[in-house]
Image 1 (cartoon, rainbow, N blue to C red):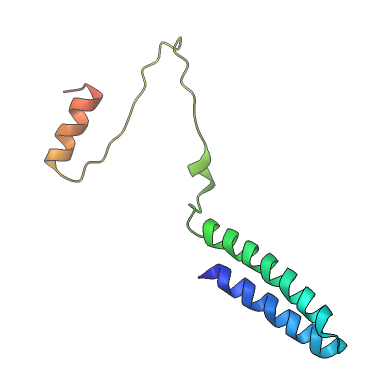
Image 2 (image 1 turned 45 degrees about the vertical axis):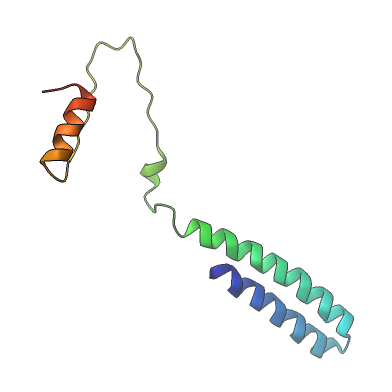
Length: 93
């Protein structure tokens, strides 16, 4: 999982800090904070990797009920049964 990599990197930073400074308490503190921060950032990265890459997917449109122009909906059914279900829901023949 992606969030595990951030936590592991944070723990490694704590170990390196403890070895470089010679103070294991400082290393433990840095490692704990970095592991939590890495886990949070990794968790967000894991969440965002599944979102659509197309920014237009986030655009929404509002239909004005007073607009006299008809609304056109395009449906691409996979088979005849799905096409019939779409026709019944959309009310067209």
